[in-house]
Image (cartoon, helix red, strand yellow):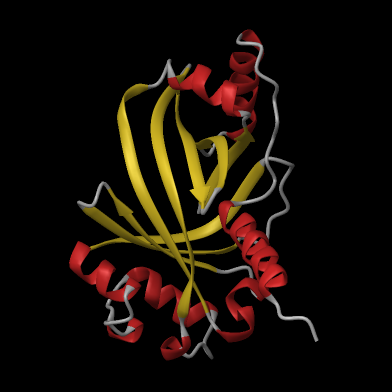
Length: 207
């Protein structure tokens, strides 16, 4: 189960926090996949391959937990497995069949969506992310600058089973730095869908 807090940031506030973050950060390519008719989206399912610094790869499936959450709190079922980078790139390029994978996320996807045709899965889009570790009190947070095409976003994330305590600490930290507290209720995948829909509207030929 994934329990996560998300806060949106303005560019200037991201840079203020970036100066307090440790290390050079990590570069990620997050590739999402969908089935015809957006059937994964309709079931609240996300399917993602993440490449990190070109050296590591992870396969992730997320699905609704059934729990209601407050604004900025995200609770989802999550299954994640490491993948060889070569296999991850082959999946992204369509050179490897999803059904051939023996991985926990694929087994979970079969259970929560028994009728899914794995051969129908196609790339939805990619997010490019610069991620930095930021310590706030007892909590290790993730400071993200991510983009889809020319669109850029900034946010602060924290995974924990103690959401209320962590939120109080993060809010206090942001207020001390005069950074507005902006809980983010939308996920990266939801924003990707929104942007893709906008692009389709712009490119649609007039009737």
